[in-house]
Length: 162
Picture 1 (spheres, rainbow, N blue to C red):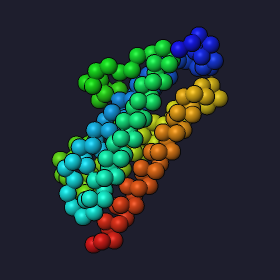
Picture 2: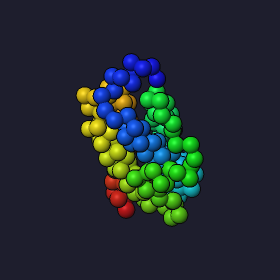
Picture 3: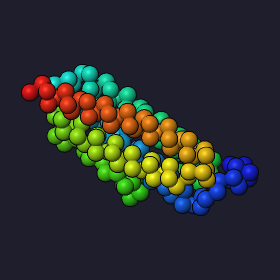
Picture 4: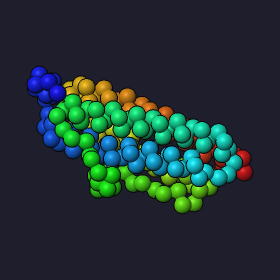
């Protein structure tokens, strides 16, 4: 990153890079959780939900790309080894061992709610101090809110189908 770019970031950049690597690890785990969930999904509304889970997976991958890019802009190194994703992430990865649609959606809902906390914390940390990271985190937070709402709606629809 340019010297002026780093200079105008008015906070502890090492701490910010640590927080961004946490978010990056969580995005990779979320990507895989959505992607594999879409592949093994069983139950009512499968076709509709499967397609949307693949969209969510691609959005999580885009988030990972954005976060990694910001880490590099801050002169940091994105987490290099997938083994470290579990160590750095605060959000859990829940394997879809029971692939019934309600279970997969509930696991993804848990992940989205944790991601909302991660990005809310990033927003608080960067507010008024690092506008580039703040703007990126706000964009991602908005998409995570949409994911949460869609999953809640699907779960409601499943309950009503009974």
